[in-house]
Amino acid sequence: MWNSFKHLAGAKILSGLCCSLAMAAPAQEPYAVKYAQIEFGSKVEYQEKVLRAALDASVAEHGPYELTLLPEARDWSNARYVHNLQQGIVVNLSWGGSAPVPEDGARVRIDYPILKGLNSYRLLLINRDRDIEFSGYSTLQDLMRLKAGQVTGWVDTKILRHNNVPTVEGIHLNNMKTMLALDRFDYLPLAALEVQEEVKSGPRRLMIDDNLAIYYPSPMFYMVSGKHPDLVKRMNSGMHTITYNGVLDNLFNEHFSATLDRLNLSQRTIIKLQNPFIDRDYDSFIRW
Image 1 (cartoon, rainbow, N blue to C red):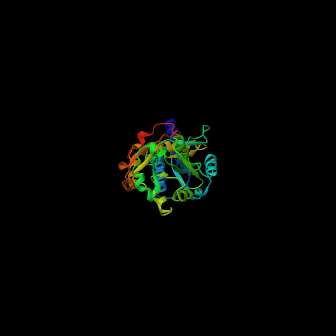
Image 2: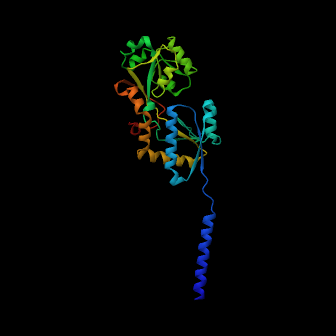
Image 3: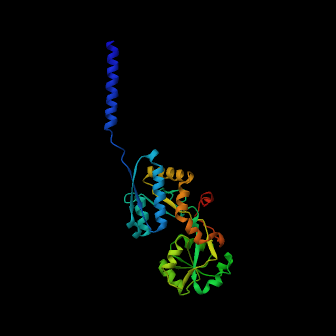
């Protein structure tokens, strides 16, 4: 009896000790996600909602998180942005295009396109007095007889040149719009999500051509500092979940269904170009 009591008492003490330890254990610290907000506007609002949805979807597996947005990153040079992301101290997450990531793993691409295929379309800014002329163009050969304008250093410029499209370069987008208005080149291809805002802020002589669209695969991804492997796992898990459970589709439709109607992509003549910087096929992700 005594031995049994001793064992029972010991069990109770052990059980009580475990409960005390469990009660005393501190709550799990939230994972600090520091996001470089490198643009503003409706597209960025969407990307931040997708980011929060992916992080929320990862809580059960990876624990709580704390998201900090750094709008001052918008003023960083590209070199400073890349340096800070790779260091993983000031920021550890941002988003970017389809350019190759470094082989040393300093930056890791989360391989789920944020904007599906919408970022792959470019519409043309042209001069108003050439609207009828552009309505007669329908092929890549037509574009070969013209000159595009594009910003030096942009991956879009490299893609145009890779496809042998004659291209005039300039150092800033605002400069390119002015140059277009002065007939220094014939058209300025801009992302479908951005072209409406850009034409409003440009010279009044410019308009959006309503006939053509240029298409080359150009998905946007979240990028994570290679010094944060736990965040890489977390973002891969969260983006996988919301891509396949319908959350990403719902967010996309909520933000862009009206834009898609205005852009009228289904009624445009699509001219396809190759993107040599894409290292896999993303067609399964780009439906809407």
